[in-house]
Image (cartoon, rainbow, N blue to C red):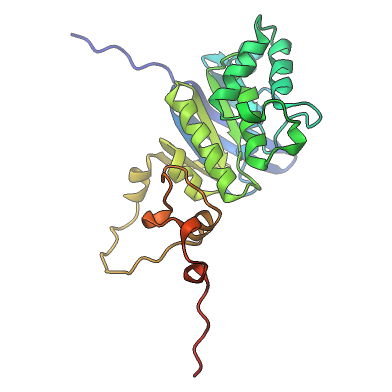
Length: 284
């Protein structure tokens, strides 16, 4: 029995090139993003991540190469490519004078959906914003704004969503909120291309990771595959101390995936204040 052919990737980029006068930003980028997966595109500032995103979103024309989104060429089938994807930029594109629900209803109407109110209510519940639906977005925290921004991107059920550095400038709790939302997107079958400078973000979210440097993809693979590119680590006994993130999330009362207890099963809210104080230096 012949095996069925593998489905075409949701995003396929081949030989992508882009220069600005004498500066070559992309020098032949090749990238595949499988359907229903999360692929992280890593690179330092100026590596060309946003240039790739802008070309995929038909906002910028490449000098050479091809790019397909959901099977549509971004040059010759630009309208179909745009309809197949949604782009969330580095800063939340929400109207602060409107409520969260009004923002969602507005986008649903612009997309000519027949039940904008129902669409808005479903997304508010999905992203944990129902209690804040009637509040102006100007009162939202950074994480809430970003979750609303991503929810707005999903109106119309695009099969592909591109997140360009979605957690830039967010505090640790807000980052965790966005990470949870991104994981839920992929679990629901949405394809996610994520650009980021944060290595821990790629480790937490990505099924596959591509490293962009010098205008080219240096390597693509799973986290385990990339780790095997380096020599095996030596095993040593090291006493593990709580990270600063552990301390921060414990003290501010973060409970995501921890129930009512903080890291290590300790509930900081009920602890003796003296127990969480930094000990004074002993006299010499």
